[in-house]
Amino acid sequence: MLLLVQDITERKVLEGQLAQAQKLEAVGQLAAGIAHEINTPTQYIGDNVGFLQSALSKLAGVFEQYTQLLAAAKAGPVSPEQVDALEQATRSARVEYLLAELPLAAEEAMDGVGRVTQIVKAMKEFSHPGVEEKTSININRAIQSTITVARNEWKYVANLTTDFAPDLPPVPCLPGEFNQVILNILINAAHAIAEANGPDPAEKGDITVSTRRDDDWVVIKISDTGTGIPKEIQPKIFDPFFTTKEVGRGTGQGLAISHSVIVEKHGGTISVESKPGHGSTFTVRLPLHASPQPAEALYA
Image (tube, rainbow, N blue to C red):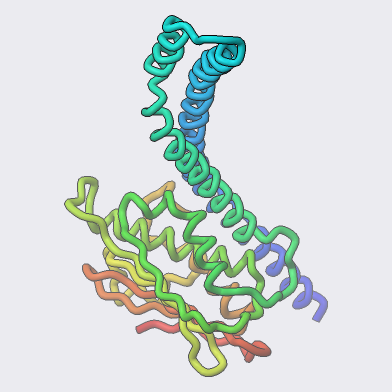
């Protein structure tokens, strides 16, 4: 009996270490993409702030000429030379152009700030540091945050659309681990589309993410137009270390850990429907109430 308990304990420790290793692998994979996603809006924030700084300097010169002219007008007659100086300063500063462009530059800078804020917020919601117990979350928002964090993984190969049920109740789950499942499936979908379309695709593939309620369950579907999964290996895709990817593109732990998270930790189900050459659809079902007994992965 003691040996059995020790064996189970060691297995749990190993599973935890594997899950952490897989999460670190995914975070490392995303790091460069997230940096790029933040760098792009940061660049045009910098460009527009630089333009605003230059414009303000030029307008300050015009304002100085205006104040001199105003002071002269109060003191007595204004000379033509003083009027010419103001007109020259106005032309030199291209005041009409600046007045037209300044609002646009400010708007673009604010858009950039908003984009960076959105990414940082998504990263924070994606990670959920320190949450080790189930908490009721907005599933749609959690999925959208993960989509945002993973954007650099899919945006070059796929158009992504969402169809979220607007009236979903809060769902009890482990937020960080649930987000990891969605991330794993999204990255796999992007890789499958990239493989199906080749290095120089004529057009992008499609990824569709939807949610709906089915009685006491929330159903999440993620579909792609990638290579699809041969029927003979579909029962193996949730096995630890099983992968069809080339060396260096994954440890084969992503779907195995996803299965463990959904089935064992949430009492849900995870299934796949796939047709080679047409794509795959992964379906995750989570209970809205107390978790039932763990179910098995389903294949179709």
